[in-house]
Image (cartoon, rainbow, N blue to C red; front, side, top):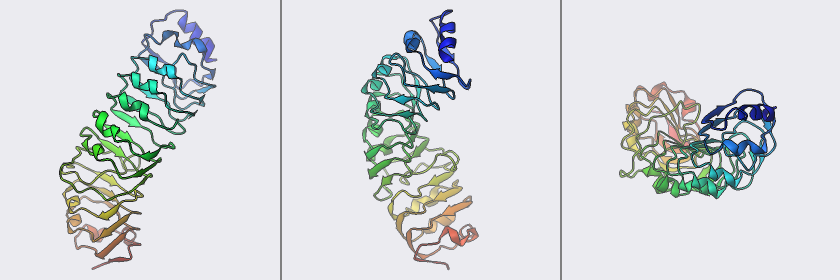
Length: 308
């Protein structure tokens, strides 16, 4: 039982700075008195156990991959030195407490799957460099404060939610972003083409997280993978896409993209995978050694599109 183990440890010290019990198959509820060491604790890992019950009001910690229920207690905001908060893969409900914004040192927040609705409490966490709230029931326009207040963000994942309308312009000012994932929402609007916005991006393997990002960048050198599928985008493919010389994977499928395939697409010699199917493209597929290597399925279900 976790309560017996914790009481044994705390009999020897109450000045812990780092405490990890991850992957130990611990069972039972977290004891109510666990918060006694919160004033000195800087890093707490209880991940991948079999903890049950509600989060005690005396605690704010790292508790993902358990079966915790109920609401995130407002007292979590009292853990003023907390830097990393992982609560993913639980069954929490209610609102994310506004007190979370009191933790000015919080720089890594991952709230994934069945996490409470509403992320406004994170507005004050200006030190965040990771914000991951994918696979929740968040809805409405993407808050503009994400781009206005969270200038240190390097990873932003909002995928598999219910966000709608266009991507807020302030999101384009996140100059530190390495990964931006907005896929599988209900976003609409054209793919931006303005020159004043740019991302300095390096990307993860497309099979994991990378999905929807803007093509407005004029500083995407080194970009490897771009997936904008199922993003409800419309408009034409910008000709500047041909400047992404290092691009190896491109997926613009299942959108409302129209117009012709830009000739510049044939300039991307490293392109190994292409999917621009299920849109409204028309005209002829441009000539180019690279484009001729792709299977017909890469272009299918574009009624006005034809080969050379």
